[in-house]
Image (cartoon, rainbow, N blue to C red; front, top):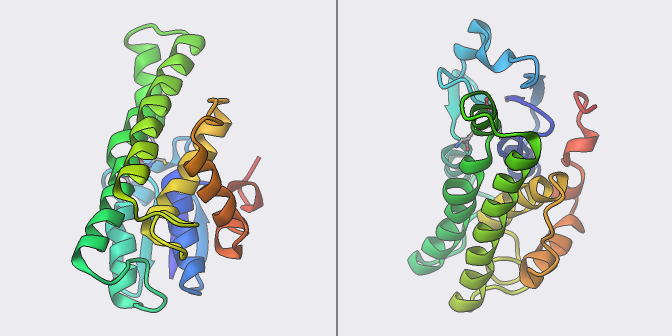
Length: 212
Ligand SMILES: N[C@@H](CCC(=O)N[C@@H](CS)C(=O)NCC(=O)O)C(=O)O
């Protein structure tokens, strides 16, 4: 397998965790977002959307990290990223989508850049935007974890799932932008439990060969 990604990209980190969780080896390819390499023709052949990550498995190319992780779970079922039971799976997917659909896209690089060059927001104002959506998103996430009553040491019970794979990189993003997330106790506890596992710890941004 080959993984095209960027060390600081949280969607790329999701795939690194999922691949490590399943014990799948891959060759990493580094696509620099600051250098705009995600918009070069060579990369657009892999992901015409011009976003990282992209995964190549044999003659298949996979984009959108959530869809790619679901592909990995179907093609390489053990260990599974999803629990047994339709309701339990729906809960894990819902928590994953709070992060991947409701939080992450609002704070993507291209959104922050647009707020600056089109609407003239300063760096401080863009950071306020960032922190606002982290705060509101994490509040909804923390409340969902409490309301559903299915969380244990991880988002679902006592073993990691797709939802934990999405949660950890989002906490990294929040920390990088100095958002105060200390009030979100359950999220913090799950984050710590995940980081004690090699598939989360060893794949974090600072260990990537393209990290700076
Ligand atoms: N929904 C996509 C999101 C991909 C995405 O937004 N990737 C970011 C990095 S985390 C990116 O490539 N950003 C480049 C940009 O905004 O210009 C997925 O999950 O794969």
